[in-house]
Image (cartoon, rainbow, N blue to C red):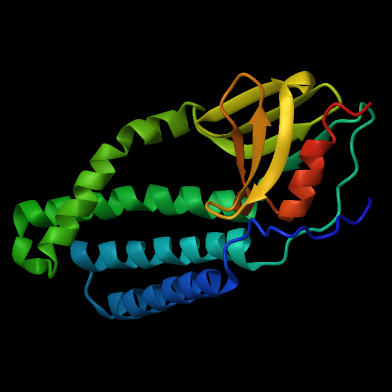
Length: 222
């Protein structure tokens, strides 16, 4: 497993931004969660408890995606020379769970809006959350039916395959062009001859951007 040296471009989320986001999520989790458990058992209280749980999950996903150290070595390829890199569950699972928690929160707030709107201190924000949850139902349907995917990169001698979210790309080796790091957004951008570029989001993987770049550059090498 060769060590991949760092490159000039970072393709990373700035450290100050990553720690700021993580600190904000932790503060919101504690600031919302602690008072929520001191409240009663009405709909608003339970919605705040669920909301604090969602922000705690987002904090875990943020730590995994943009804070923790990345792997700097290429994992071993399979016997056929194919290298598989998957997004860590510590990134994907908390994001999905936080997303799913939005729906009971929206349901409780919709109930409160319909029955006792005075119990909500921020009616406008509650309405936005309810409308946002309704608007995301098609994406939820795609998630439940297998239309949204955990990011995975498969780099082999004959092709480059990427699947993540709604995107699925299979690129034969002769059509894989230049690969380079970019900072905004943090990604590896792969030129595909005759098609749109393939953008691999670096926060989605446990490997460093340089390792992702090296994996892409393996394509076509027997």
